[in-house]
Image (cartoon, rainbow, N blue to C red; front, side):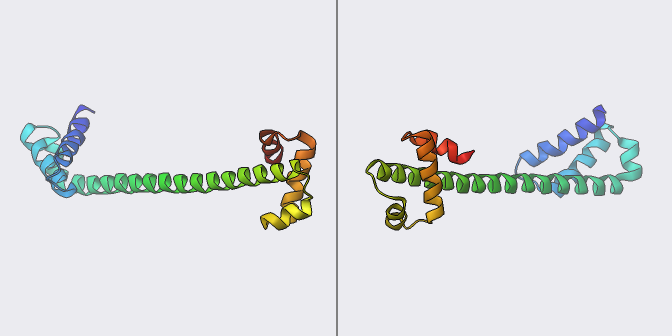
Length: 143
């Protein structure tokens, strides 16, 4: 297990230097292992297979990292969309509650705000059940 850890760490060290690409790092690590006597017999006998296996492993690691980064980006985008939707809903509730406090009818509110009458009616029902507290109206709508 030590030999494997040493070998992988050597590859990573080469990669972190920034001057060497992945394939060169693997080749140099194989050469180092022979020189240092780590995996020497195994590498001499199966060097090509070891290199091919490591290329495949590091390609998989790269692919997983890219997939992770894409997932983070997707999550952020979805979070932003959800946040914008919540912000729009908050603004709509704020406006409707203000107009209801001024005594305006749901029909007039829907026309003034160019909003679907059903959505205005839902907000009006929540307002009637919860009172003028906007946070309570929002909570009721999210139930």
